[in-house]
Length: 128
Image (tube, rainbow, N blue to C red; front, side, top):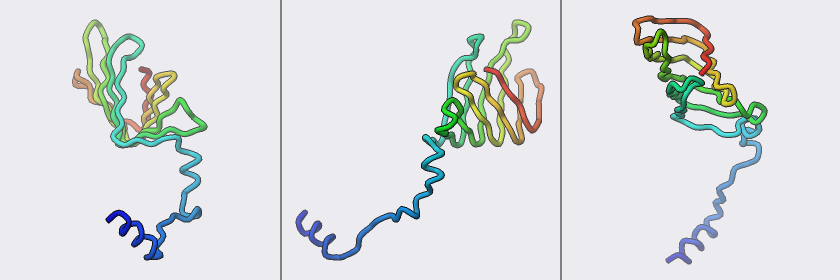
């Protein structure tokens, strides 16, 4: 049975191949890796937890410490006047610097705080 399947594939003269011209070399050279439904969990410099999610994330060869995020959202916990405050964040896009733990958000940035405060802006940088 296996021999028949192998012989049939050879006799049909249909060869499946991808021409080199069909490969997007810009993506191959630029993107080190790409992930969907990305999530990052950690603690900030003060030991407070944070969670960041994104529709997709990617790294580039020439910027190894940066993760480029599409539609990031998440929760950041901070302590102010001995009170724990949770901020829910979201944006159109963002960049997370793995080395400095800096989150740069752009496009329709929204912050909803557990204190009732709300922030709407075009850009925001959060030092985690």
